[in-house]
Length: 258
Ligand code: NAD
Image 1 (cartoon, protein in one colour):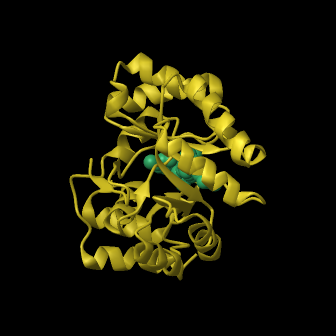
Image 2: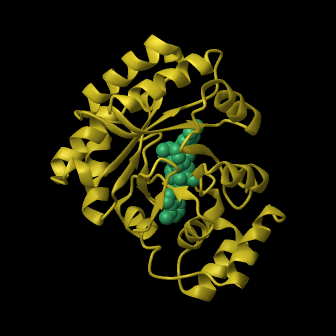
């Protein structure tokens, strides 16, 4: 699996598993299955209520902690300097680990500057390796950088061929911020798109695979969610083919044809 080197030097696996809406009681099984299939990156959040299952799945699979990238995100109710630090400790307890690889501010809030200072402190004391934002626009990011001097390693936003957010990604690149995509399949809706199906037939892959591959070739970090073992296997099968410029351009047109 390719990795992307972040602006702080850490290398994140470019593909992983998202566990939004995965019920807490099913999470350990799904995470273990994914790890057995070769996944090495899990994207969870305090708000998903399934961090304990992520930690359990990791232990059940018997994969070394250092070999798996774990991202979690701060709950909207835990903004502020002390609250954010305490919330991270709770995440570590639920995950059963002494650090997370990436901690994100899930959404902008009133106390972003204090929250971001807490993230900086958490990174300095090693409980968090990389820090980033999610659902921030350019102005919100610039404000934080101006006030604290700390540039986020990533911004996780809703990107897919239908809503590519090219302008925001150009800004990320200029700032050295890596783009992470949430909802890369548009919650599954893009797999039925005629263009995705046509490109998939041309290259002998599935629509989900060509859409996920489009993200990889644009340098985006992606972690589709699935609870189905066959789809988990399908989604990770995107490293042994390359989309041509023509295929990439065809998928770009998804934007114009809903
Ligand atoms: P997604 O685009 O990954 O779509 C997931 C849905 O697509 C699944 O529920 C399934 O129905 C379908 N699917 C998956 N693989 C398929 C396949 N091979 N063929 C056909 N259908 C398939 O949407 P998502 O889960 O919302 O986003 C991915 C991850 O991004 C989440 O799990 C979560 O980790 C993260 N996320 C973050 C935020 C945020 O605010 N930062 C918001 C939403 C999601």
